[in-house]
Length: 349
Image 1 (cartoon, rainbow, N blue to C red):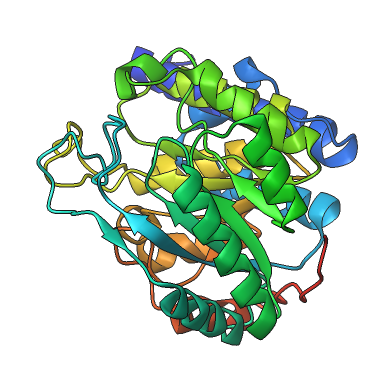
Image 2: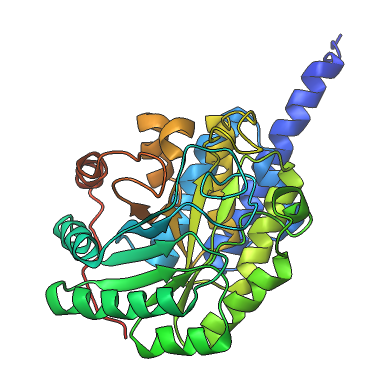
């Protein structure tokens, strides 16, 4: 006589079977054929049971090795203008609309050159200049041009910029000045964007991304997860990023900042973060997937290691714009320990 399993046990068994079935599908579709998962499939990855996470990460690692190679790209970032931004991105302490402890500060050019040298000394191939603005004015563009010239005179490193929303003329200028890559994140899914930003639209961000690609610069376009979006919306974001075909996707995890509307959101669960890493790799098998802000709190040392063995193939070393990151040596030593070679410098433009 057989005993029928309890409904809770049946549900668990069904979840496990569904989870591994999507991994079998992903192995054939993504690993073998190089085709990213669609939105519904990605939602299944994000809903995997805990015991399926190691298998998902292992598959994502195999995908990145096959379609991206073994090199890991290292980047440093620095803000040329911090704070005082007129936009209301609810996660950002640099908004001048919130009562946050960040105040507007400009960084002078000698400090910028020094930071570029220090970044290059870590083995990084990329140095990103960031400004907290809606978009650059003439003064900022002139300062960026001067900074690019000075850095190129003294440091052998690719220069990237993140200066908010651009006009066509500004895009053309940055390309002419030799900017290698431009960062402009989507941050969250189109359906959730109005919950996070109200002073500009998702479409405005997309317009800048399209102009950057058309001008021949590499597009860096990332995500910030853990802001209260649903799992389906994380899958939506991954497919929207995949459709843009960016060269690089920085994956950020919310670090709730005091004084912002999301200060009480809470830190994302580490297992959910690992599921997201696997999902984003399985959505974009050939894209540079970069560890960015918030991983120190969300994942810690062990989770950072698991993510590097689960689809990540780039890291930002050192501190971020308004928060502390892991020490650069900690990440570099971990890459050595994991036998992950740092990508060699190569001027693209």
